[in-house]
Image (cartoon, rainbow, N blue to C red; front, side):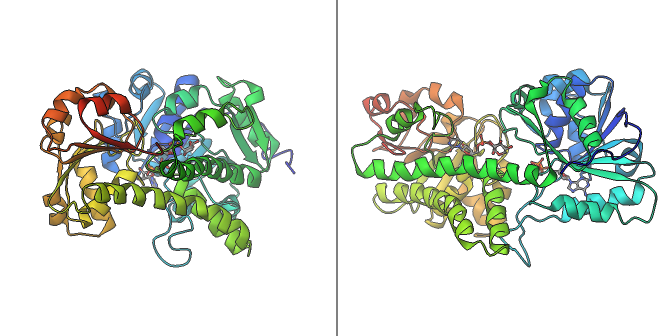
Length: 469
Ligand code: UDX
Ligand code: ADP
């Protein structure tokens, strides 16, 4: 049930604070600022380097890469969009505070490897409670387990002061690589809350550019659970088509043809049916594990097992791809050079969280391969730190075995095989004849994204294999 009133007089928002200048906070606030020129939006973060990068005079060097983002930052930064490390001051000056900090899977203690680590969210809530001297609307933007708003509320309601807080859940549905497009033209905006007037204050901000019928109002718990459910359903579609891809490889079926045929059924629809080396990203795995953890905590083991299978299959798909490389290269990659095209978890982003490339690389490095990588947007330092984070090998071993190139042709020179891990468009237009000439023979391509034209590659002379064909 949504209650009517939070604060008797309707609150007018002139200043917004967003805590967390990451992949969600940065683009979302840039679009809110652009569409609401009368509201001052300040994005704050504990990470000084990140804030400095957001303030970089060269908008083409922002800390995150998203098509269209640089232009919006250029138009709004210094006018009504600011990036700062002055967290306490910005919180207190603002009527509305978005919490957009990271909620990684716990790596310790209860719920390790499954539950979301809410330590950063809790720290934010405590900080807001400590510094706020006027009433605030606090908006959960980070993806959170169901009933987190309750925890935030109990921290905020126990400050001992007269300051009142209304908590809203406003999950973000943007996908990286298309974040700006998704924000400007969302399928829906979801606002969950306890008080109708607080919900309307936030709805009015979105109404500057989103049609009212796309702004859904629900209770807080439905809103929180909808976000986890949306991601679980999307990931489930990928694991489902990936499971079929394995069957296609054993039969004469082609997964692209199967996906097209089933996708034309309007009840199924054509999106999110691209078989791949496995899904990555900061959301899918984390949110499903979270859902599984919550279900188990209510003793709903069948529910938990059902959803867990989506991530278990995704792990299988990544391992299967790496295994196939080893098997095809005469059962050993020891001392062989494998060229990786792509490291990001999908095209048009520099984000590598949970990218399939990391796990495939780890598997091949354990088999003593050496890897040369090219990705248009991911820096070498990030690739090395992704591998070091797994803690499978020493830092110096990773540095010895993995070489990063800024030119794809250099990366693929003298390799035994090319593995395509990310679907960057530019890979399609490379001079594959030239790549073939410079590789060891037989020259293999393992296309983890079904990106290249199979017939053309075979005509050039490659031994080509892809997913589900
Ligand atoms: C996802 C949700 O789409 C978004 O709504 C939510 O807010 C955050 O999580 P994101 O992880 O940024 O967004 O990207 P998405 O496009 O969903 O891709 C996730 C992964 O699935 C990528 O690794 C992508 O390559 C893979 N994928 C996607 C497939 O393998 N096949 C597909 O058909 C679609
Ligand atoms: P997301 O993809 O959810 O946006 P990111 O990791 O890209 O996640 O961004 C989250 C940001 O939140 C990071 O820049 C991190 O420094 C910041 N952050 C985490 N905890 C706090 C906190 N207590 N106060 C301010 N910023 C924080």
